[in-house]
Image: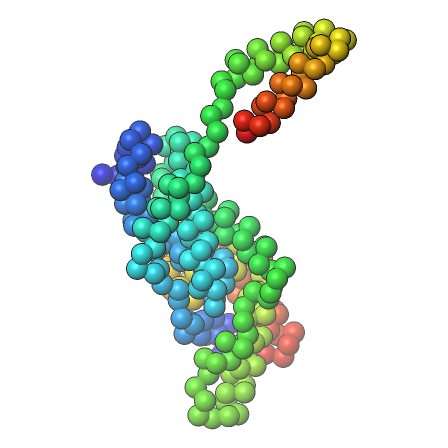
Length: 184
Length: 80
């Protein structure tokens, strides 16, 4: 059964098993999308946000008319919920825990680790300074290791647009790092 | 080291995973939430608006009418 048929059946009969099937199908990608918007080291927030997405989807399911694919509509809702949550979270704390990034260094060579930690810190700042959409695409591609086609599906944008976002994001990051003395 | 190489280091950051009972919990939360309020069709909204425009001035020019408006509003507020 397609997502659209399952959604229609759920709206008609309200069998929780149907809604649960939709959640099962799409939860992994929803989690990837919302965590890329919220940023790394926010695992609990990301899962809560994914849950909020499905609550919002449930509220609006009757309004889904089938103009687009169910998945496209779902990811649009997920993007909106996650961006709003990210904006609220930014008031409370910085986006990425830079100390956690430092902890990823190996620990064998102190000098190399210090350089790597410094670079990681500046990279985190540069990525965090990107506009929301560019940052999301960067995290989806480099952190979540999603191919461009998959990102295009998640963000309902053509693949060439995603490539363009990645290119512009890399340019901005390169400029930000160059200003801090890290050149490629 | 290019920007691309630097960005690829992000892959070392652990990715979140869904907890085993996520689907059950999300479904339970979603289905437990109150259903959305029913909306009246647009024709009814036009009807109520027209009725309010006609009856409003009549009701508000008398004490009984005013009491009826306030009482009606209180009843609607208590139902919601």
